[in-house]
Length: 171
Image (tube, rainbow, N blue to C red; front, side):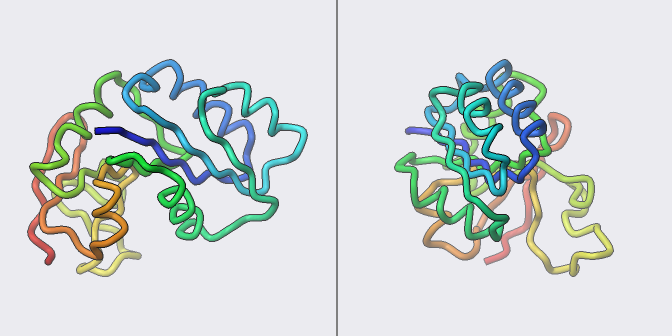
């Protein structure tokens, strides 16, 4: 099955450059495709960013755009079977993690890595999130068709520091 990493990025070219260098050095070989849509990036930085990942598909939008709309565009643009939704301010520090997470898809519907406000023991632990809110992962791994057509998932796994925890059935 083909794998795509999808990144909706903000306007900071330094952060995106750091992310791209990190991607290239640590886990680029674990995906078949990298697609990025970056919003409001200065024109003078765009060619430089494209040069950091010449095999990636990098598009630029002239203004800040709703995160969900950009994710929708990224999902629509890929034909990969599996997708990984990324954040531009989060980094994978160990080779093999991406392959491990993609490898779990099929036995579970979604794999996500935890944010500090969504720990394995309590995915809705943030005071700003309602207790019945779904997990808010930094990286999510799903079947592309499942992401598009299913509003809820029957099984999910949240990864944290090499440990995993199965989330309760939310369907």
